[in-house]
Length: 222
Ligand code: AP5
Image (cartoon, rainbow, N blue to C red; front, side, top):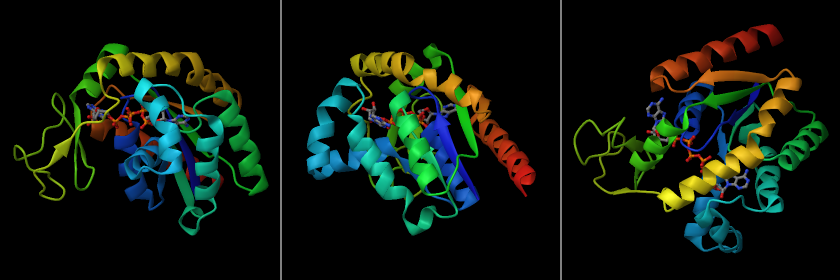
């Protein structure tokens, strides 16, 4: 059983690796970005509140994202572990998460910090697209579908790009990361939970690094 946090700037590969690690460890990924995008698509109250923040690349107010996490981590499928992708994103969220976990008698096993230079991040975000049907993520520069125009996963020929993957929003998302999120690196380092990942490597190599780290942690806690 392990609870994991994925920390890192936009485009560093958190979502890609979270999906792979979740399958490997048979635990769910909780991606606040994914949940919020679905709420926006549904036009729910949360979606309406979140939309303008997401469009500008800013952080959605803490009470909304904390509420999402609070409801999600108590569900049955999270009792054998979970991956938090994109949460916490500032100091207040990290402190609230600590209190939440303490009250549930849970703890974080490792915080993976995805490290990638800014030039590569921008290319990864600019090239990203995904399958409209199953959500599989591709990239114009790094990962095209095996057969052009056809999703490897579900065979659909419908693809889409994220609304917040445009130049001005990306710049603000990176600024927000530096201003608010990056201080969490020191926070988790002090707690001895931080594991740095050289996320410039290929997808399989990054994944190999995560698996090695998780096995080491799991063998220590046995
Ligand atoms: P969110 O959805 O969390 O976006 P993000 O953090 O900006 O991260 P991304 O999804 O852009 O990147 P990623 O690291 O997952 O990279 P990916 O694997 O896709 O958040 C969106 C918005 O929601 C926020 O701006 C905010 O408004 C709001 N929000 C979310 N959480 C919040 C919170 N806690 N508090 C407040 N607001 C919140 O990879 C990127 C591309 O690179 C893909 O095309 C992929 O194929 C490719 N790629 C991946 N790995 C590699 C590799 N190793 N080599 C080559 N290419 C690769």
